[in-house]
Length: 428
Figure 1: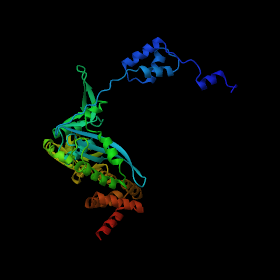
Figure 2: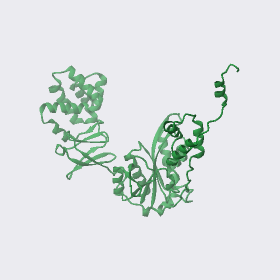
Figure 3: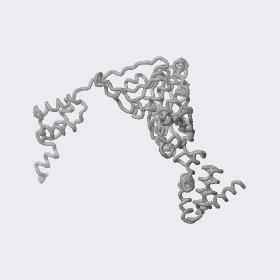
Figure 4: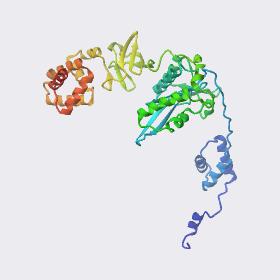
């Protein structure tokens, strides 16, 4: 013990006179906190050292800030009840579920609830992007019979793209996502978002996300995804049709009957609504939406077209004409109708390379198949193999050709004769 230096003993036992902040330093801290009462104490310390030449320890500064930071006024929570058909609350959440076999899966989910009747809907979604927002609200509307006049969101970035500040009034006006704004207009209802850090604007409607997590996801156990979705349907039937709501004392389904007459009936459903986009047709006579390309006529090149994206199809319109495509192309890249291919085959050499590219794009094995074919038959694949393969493609379709090329690659055989043999097997 006696071998320790005085400095070591002071550091170990905290011996010494604590730092006393000078009057000028205390005044500067008060000024900084007056300008910004949320300022981190680390930022206060940094400014004291850089601007005021403060050289002492941080403890005295931290203690002074803790004791003298202006106390924020606590506002009371405003509780209110909506009239029938007036308010609905919408929100997104995410949760990690551990199945009974200890495997884990992470979910995104949409939750919506009417304020008056407390009728609610919960839907598992792939993500929290704008289409999931709109499809979630459509599922909610399908369930309860429409949308209320005012639809409140807790300010997700998917819905609110930004804000505009009015210098005259000092008010912040939300700027909504264009697809969301279009959807609200088509529904004939109003959007509303909570102000930042103002959760009490939701009134007496409980936190939907917390309620769903604690009442369903955390309160039950599941074998797998299918079991979870089955139990979710059962739970929603219970909370909507059997359980009395603690806030109203009534079963939501019974209370909903007096509210449905005030809901806005929608002219479309989850399955019949098309997300609206504007696109310009590129030089390849295609438009791009959500990572996929869809072909149109060459006369549309350079034109602005209206696009509607449905759950199962994409509809492109221009000058009174419409082109439909499957939402998810078979090749995972682009959708090209049979009649649209002909425009690519005007020049003989262009037709050869265009046909080969279309076949290669069907799947990764398509590219491997033609790579081997070109190198094994450099002089014959154009005139001998490609015409036969193309005829098979037009006769049997994309799915058959994709599976046939996968089978050839796995067997290590490359040529039209092998595909023809497979076609003969199926015919036989």
